[in-house]
Image 1: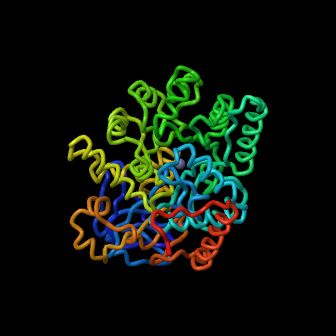
Image 2: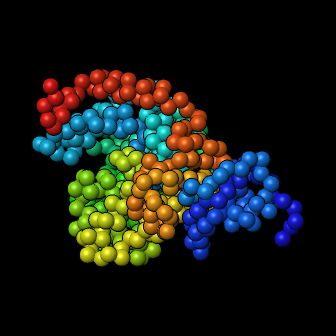
Image 3: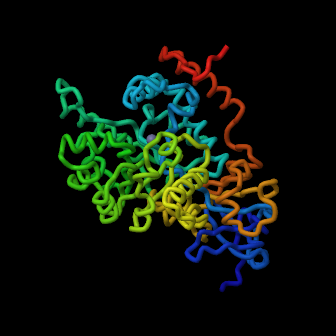
Length: 464
Ligand SMILES: [Zn+2]
């Protein structure tokens, strides 16, 4: 070992580190040093105090430190501005809700409103410890959104809304596909992903039955060519399998496999209604699965009855977690997933706290092709770091940082967050954006969007 001291910008000293390294070491009275955007030292406090020379030292004694969490599926526009607006009533079908409520609300946004919405989503993620996200492919004004996100400091991969399926026979299918493919090519060219970029565009498809085969093939070819990933919604309920079976006599995952568009650079969201043959295809092709517990269980997907997520993990499918924009923090998604499957299978050992943290960090990083750069507290990785405050009543003494964080800590305990070595949250407050102004802008923008749609606010109880 060299006698030369390690030069660092910051030393966080005396914390409990949940490193997520290969041995899953938890370091009590540990320290971590950051230089520029990287982690340059991790270990016991005593050792690092000798080996590191830091420009600044931060007392970490009341904190549990983790790598930043990864949200594998979130709609950053539309939802954040109009959450709470009743999109439907019990008599509406799911497709009615989508066609008459969700899509008109999305389409009513201006570029500036999408920008505000994306910043609100980023603020929410950062406050609750998410440092990296994969957007769900429903951004309409990509330039405005990327511009807004850049100011927040968050890491993410975003896709512009493309469909390309002619549902009306009068439409020109070839032209629809070509237009959609042109959008994919353009976004990737404008926001390239060199592996280091904080923000980049990926061919993220809306999925379900909305993308033509040509669009799927083009998205996969672009991902192969540029070393990036494809993501899409698929099979939250029986509707997608029914559609693919009627059209191709194949279930959705079988059809995508026939097209040759699955693989390690593809991540599919929901996958609630899949059968065993589709599960085998996911495992064989290395396709990633994104589980959004809140969407599944609030939406009544029937996942506790038919879901195969425990089997996916058993068979080596990389499962990552998403909030779908419904929850603010990713650990609540892990808790919900664990609780429902433990109960459904009457198996108290399913999805322990250790698995929950793996899903929220390492699996997320792997699903995003970022295993080398994020997901653990290790030397050489990006300094994407979260300090969780244990000086809160729900913590008490720390006997088991992993279990207490995964099972019972409040997301409000996220105290400080670094992304790329930049402190983006300090004592629960964002450092890069004016929170008060953003929240006020978001309230105003949300009301403006809804007013533009002319949709009525159907609250469940009379509001007088
Ligand atoms: Zn979604």
